[in-house]
Image (tube, rainbow, N blue to C red):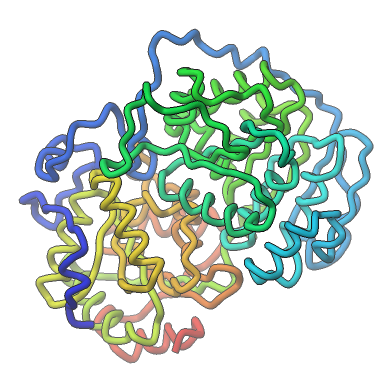
Length: 503
């Protein structure tokens, strides 16, 4: 995988002058300066930057949003293949799992998009279970958890497309995502699936320099479906550029983060409350692969009368993805492992994402691998919007095979050719670096093995702290992760990749 002209043209960050052992957080001001980007108002989850919330807005009264406790376990999930998904419903509406898309009473235009453009054959498990809940009157709210790569995006995209009145030229469906990349990706799926419907859509994300328009000159939004990030959505709503009186369905993708204390909780709740005040019958859908108990309890307070779909945490790890841990004596051995073991087999493995914890680690790893003659690109939140878009497009188009990323792309990023994920650094909680971030770990490994394809994950462990983090991850998911005997053994790595079905 020698360096090509394509690699040379791809933007790469300037690396701070730090040793390999330095663990500097992404928010470090030095990295902002050295990357020649303007200081941002705040850093959000996954290295993403969003507009700061207005300080003049009144505090949200969460306790005013109470829900009924009248719940019961739904009995239609008797089939063995659905036994790992627990459904809890409210009210007396009966639901039946959909074995075909025709069972959902979709329009011919939507069916054409599903079969011809999306090339689907039948609903996946989560689609078969959740879509009847989404599309059956009285349109109950839904909190849904399912495995990475199981088809969650189709659930809420199809829900939005189905609920829109094509004759009403006003926003009727809103989808809020944690990152620009995920919002753009979801919009691409929606436009492909809804190609024959005539339904209009718009992406509400921070503008890059090439598409910049003065906010005062921006016309009111007439698109029927809007997908965007919370800061931009909230900004448009506050400026009366985005009318919400006709919104009938509100979606939160990666909802656990959208409602987490260290995520976009305040903006998300403000958007939800404003829409519910203007449109009393707006259906709220919350989707993610992970919901910890704190977020579950909070959701139960703020989302009225909702159905639930949840997976036990020990069932969340993907069966199609083989996980490994590798002990490395030092930082250099981690780089050589990637160079000599992974890259030498790279042509046979498809695409690879290497996750790091900090921007500084991303920059130093990128520099080391390029100096060794390998083609890699790197994405992190300090890059310009247009550079991030270019890097993602090149990777999705297959022009680059190896992508180094902070957790900016850990959630929701869908590239079906990714067969290999390397955790160069294990994810840790921002407030406590001795505690693994279990949700981020699950999202990272979910970038491989999309839709049941084969995949492998290598966790590179260098210190006693790494060993401790790995042990906690194993205990949390009640899963023993296989050990690669030696970091510098070709045979051990070939054996691991063969066991994962990649060789």
